[in-house]
Image (cartoon, rainbow, N blue to C red; front, top):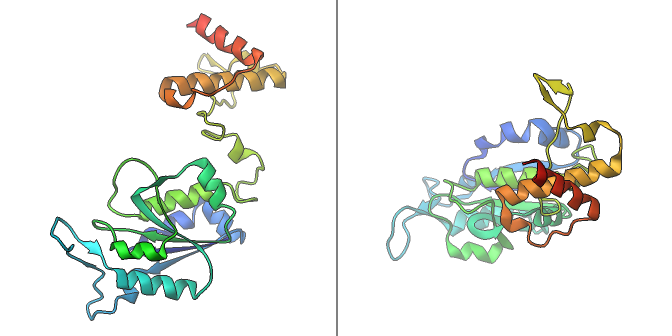
Amino acid sequence: MQIDILTLFPEMFPGVLGSSIIGRAVRNGLVRVETHNIRDYAANKHKKTDDYPFGGGNGLVMMAQPIYDCMRAVLRGQSARRILLSPRGKPLTPALARDLARELRLALLCGHYEGVDERVMDIVDEEICIGDYVLTGGELPAMVLIDCVLRFVPGVLGCGLCAEEESFSDGLLEYPQYTRPADFRGKKVPEILLNGNHAHIKAWRRAQAVKKTEAARPGLVSDITLTKLEKRFMQEMEDGE
């Protein structure tokens, strides 16, 4: 996969792109990520990339010309899924991330200031947001999108099922996890995780996931169906409260 980032602040990305799982994916050749400075394509003498909005209003708007010319120079007529990171876009979800992970190339446009000239929408395929809040620019959302998408690229996590077993993969938050020691300062790992009965462990974990989701995000559990064993563990949890 190739990911191109069009931004006014390319210096924000090296730490994220060179570290941890993303850095390893880049080093292993599973993904190639390049940043492109939109300011380099500004046609005016002072490399200005923003201006006041027509009709008045606060703040500045990114100009269409530098973005158009940057996108054209980066893609060189080649196809890519072109995305504007924007608070008015559709939400980033596991399903969308999985879909994006199937693409051969993504071009991520990071908005800034009060947004971009609307005529830029003619060269963008879609707008995506990472949450119902506003940030100072699209750089952080681009990092989040890259991290989320790469988890679904084969080989990136080094575990074929990891991305499928985590929070939101089936509409639920993740179940509680434990590691050694089994007894930490008097706080013990639930006995069911130590007994080796994988069917019971699976059912217990799903029941725990439902319980946590009901408490933190009740709107996510309206269509969840439980097996008899999962219902039993749910009842045991309720009885123990």
